[in-house]
Length: 381
Image (cartoon, helix red, strand yellow):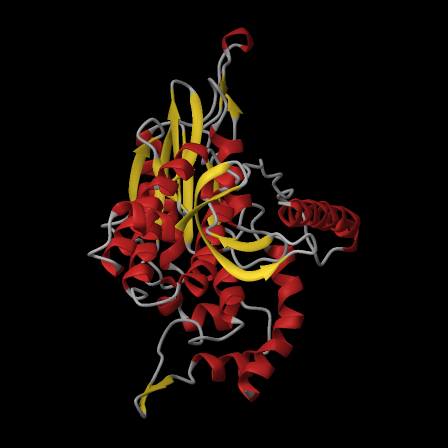
C-alpha cells in the first residue's frame, strides 16, 4: 500500500508533464480520452472520398509493458531516478517466490500506464517530420503536391499508421517504427503486425474499419461479437439453476456494457443480430431447465407481453407501482440502445493546461446532459 501511495504521489507530478509532451493522437490511459476518440480519429483520417490513405499498417508491440528498457526510462522519464529505479527493479512475488525484473514497467503499478505512454510518445512527431506533404521539384507549372498520408492513431500499445501505398509503409514507415521501438527495448510482433488495404478492412479496439465503395464503415468486429456471445452463453451455462430475476440483472449489465461501447459506430444491424442470438441462447437455457415441458408452457413462464412487445424475457418482481400495476424486470435489448455519433476530443487538448479548461468543462457538461436525458427516458419507460 505504501508503494502504491508513493506511485500515486509521483504520478500527480509526472502526469501533467506526460500530457504536455504526449503525441496528439494518443488516446490510451489519458484523462478525458477514450477508445471512442481513437476510433473517431480513424474515421476522420480514412473517410475522405478520394484523397485519404488506402493502406494501413497494423502495429502490434510484443509484450510492451514487460519489455520496456529500464535504462531508457531512467534516462528519459522526468522524475526522481532513484525512486524510479527502485520501482523498476523491485520484482514481483508469486507463490512466495520472488522474481526479479530486468525490463518492463512495475507489475500492477498505477504509474505503469503513464510510463508506457511516455516511452511510446514521440513516434507521431517523428512520422510527421519524416513524411511531410511537399511540392515536387521542377518548373513551377509542372509541380505537383505530394502527400504521403502518413498518420498515426494510438491507444496504449495498439496503433495503426495510414499511408498512401503499401511500399511506403513496408519500405519506409516500418523500418522507422522498428528503429524507434528498438531504442526503447521493444519490437514488433512479426505474426500480428501486417499491412492491410482499407477495402479489406482491419480490426482496431474491438471495431472493424473498412471502406466499401468509397464509403468508410466502422462496425463491431466479428471477433468482438463472437467473444461477447461466448461470454453470454457461458453465463447461462453457469446459471442453469438460478432464478430468473438475478440472472436478468446480471445479463443486463453485460448487454448494456457491450452495446454502450459500440453505440458510436454503425451497430444497428449487429445489435439486431445479437438480440436474435441472445433469444436463441435463452430459449435453449429454458428448455434445458424444463426438458419435459411443452414450448407453450416454457414461453408462458419466461416470456411475457409488456408494452408494445409481445415477447419479453421478464419476471414479475411482486411489487406494484402507485397505480397498482405490477413491476417487471425485463432483459435489456442491444437494439434498444440508441446509436449516437461521437464528437472526438480535439487532438491537442490538454487537461493540465488552463487554456483548455473551458473546452473540457463544456465537453463534460455535454456528456452529463446526454447521460441525464438517457436516464430520464429509461425511467419513463
